[in-house]
Length: 251
Image 1 (cartoon, rainbow, N blue to C red):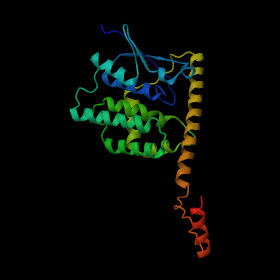
Image 2: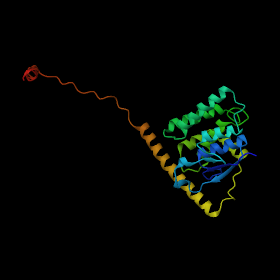
Image 3: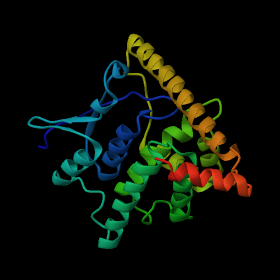
């Protein structure tokens, strides 16, 4: 009998099983690979570091960070990548690096927008990134895109751009429909209030950061690009030139 696997992660909202990208990555991979995870919602996430979750706990191990958790699950024979070729494995690593560098921090709107465009072009009309079977790359893309797609923000340019990429939106919707059935029935009323409070804080934080980023980006684009200023050349009279030469020679 396989050892029980317990995943501690952020709670959900807006139709998502979790509002935390890295938690969603692990949850999606577990669904794709058939790993029997017992998910435990941490209601007090905002009181601690965001780096504390997700955490996978077994009888003998405690594993954190999505990449390490996925490697651990593979060693337990829960492998969503067993049909991938060597090239597809290399592509997976490259796209994950792109997501983590350009999309997850979303510091520069243009870089994050370009990342979304590349993902949309790569997915095309396929159901998943490598055909009809989901893999690690699908888990990462879903984990990073689903909160941006589903969480209701007043106005976020990157979210508006994502919603124009219909294949990426369809990709998220189909994974939610096929692999997740969100139910908050097991959460106590007190626990639900804490989750709601955490979601409100998340919205406020993302809105504040997004507004700042967009303002910085607008300022950069609107700032005038002036040519280098040329200093005027002073012309001296013959008398002034003689006087200047004397001053240079005097001790």
